[in-house]
Length: 308
Image 1 (spheres, rainbow, N blue to C red):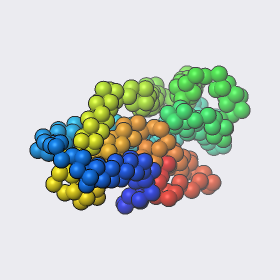
Image 2 (tube, helix red, strand yellow):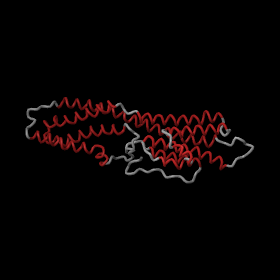
Image 3 (cartoon, rainbow, N blue to C red):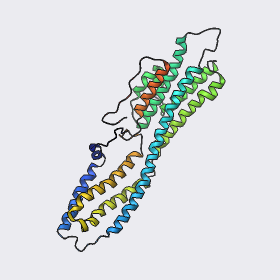
Image 4 (spheres, one colour):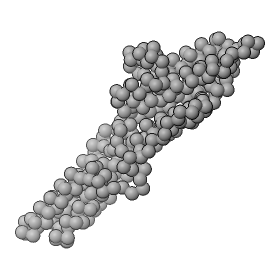
């Protein structure tokens, strides 16, 4: 996610650089041909081109609004995961206690159970991040899981689902053993598990269901028809002055189209994406502090104005 207030010129070139070069060449050719009187008998209806541009702008606005809605829904899902994770940790710390009050158990034993469950949840969050980005860095889950659980996870197609499912099983085991009261188990902890599955489902739906392709195809096609016709209408009135105005106007339309295209897929590890790595790290910091640990990782900082 771009966190810097100003957009750097190199980012503009990365997104639309080749198009800008094309507009310079194409605009120059149109101006040169017009200067040699190639367009004397050719009259382009500049008023109609302007109306066409307005229609294209409306279509662009609609498409980009839908693209932003997808990004915001994705960010909301990760915001919900953040809130639910903090609440889940507080529930774990408060609800899990030794079932036999007559026989005290060492604080280390209870702390070990708390740590096991919270670390498994951190593994779930990072597994979801890796799955959404189609990354294979599964070794990043190792610090949060036992060796047996980590090895068993290698056979799972959807590792995030299996981790959350294993979490539900572990909570059930503790409930059956008397460590968690029935009310806390049903109306507290299992509701949190449900919230994690819901947020995961929202992310997977966005990932696997693209914005209807007809919107993207026709929007891009109409934008390019417009930018190819635009200099033919301008050159009759502006001559060589067409070149800078054409490059600016055409770049505005194509870069707006490109922004919508890049925004509609928020989990592709692009600079405009939801910063899942930073969110996972922030959740890890919060949860480890809730556990009372002293070894806390540092937050991820933006690199070159981009937070991943």
